[in-house]
Length: 129
Length: 129
Length: 129
Image 1 (cartoon, rainbow over the protein chains, first blue to last red):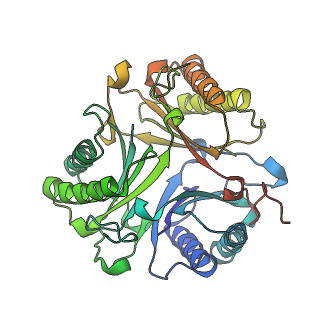
Image 2 (cartoon, rainbow over the protein chains, first blue to last red):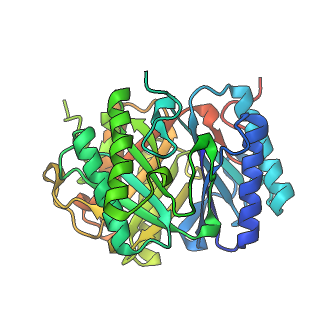
């Protein structure tokens, strides 16, 4: 269910992008408990001139080699689960693709079960009554 | 009002993209009852290597020729309207551009009337008191 | 905190894009009162064929030289603050980059404090209890 968008520097190779996407997915599987095959991810590369990422906000030192992850998911994860997700995404991105954990931003946007159609024109999460 | 984003394979030609965008718009007009000229759509093409779309999640068989549609719209549509929208988007995309209905994913994100400015610095949906 | 996305015509030069991004940021600083260094912006350019922006919806005359601004931010800004933001974004974009105020659309999507990680795997806005 989550729709995951990754925004990364165009310096990152296709291999690095795949590794980052893999790492974000594994973080979701382990912390948010989504099924292994519930994977829907879109990656976008940006030129340096099209990304404005503050290098020190909140005391975190960031480089131009940022990884912004926006995750649209169903409402209802606890704060503890979200914290675990952030930790898993940052450490996973570091292990899988050499990203600095400080460079990994995550933003969540929540919606509801009825807000998803996984194909064939059906709202699979809310079966027709 | 809806802000519609289409994410499609780069294999799709400009003509196919326009037909898909047309089909999504007509689906919104017919099911969500937006005005014919309330059309704001942004299309993005992705290389195969930058889209991770599970081929079987929830028993729906998907190909690499995916169509992901994210629609940001005002809160308040009923479940029945959303179901009708999904059906209309999937069947419209199939008729207009030969998409397989199984390849058409739709994700809704809701906000409120005050969250929209359609130009000129004004919140048109909530007139100044 | 806000995650700002700008969608602009590919006709806009890198310099114009930077000026637009600067203008949106200054509008947020002045009206939403975010810190000066709370800046996270992603810009995307679109070919004319990939943007469908109605030229007259709600009586606002738009050209193909659109600027769509989507801002993801924490819940809780008043209607008055949002109105001031729209006005500041439209006038700032006009002053900084010669955009027509009528061409500047703004869409807000709200989430919560726990929905943000600004790096290092931590939910900075909701310190661990």
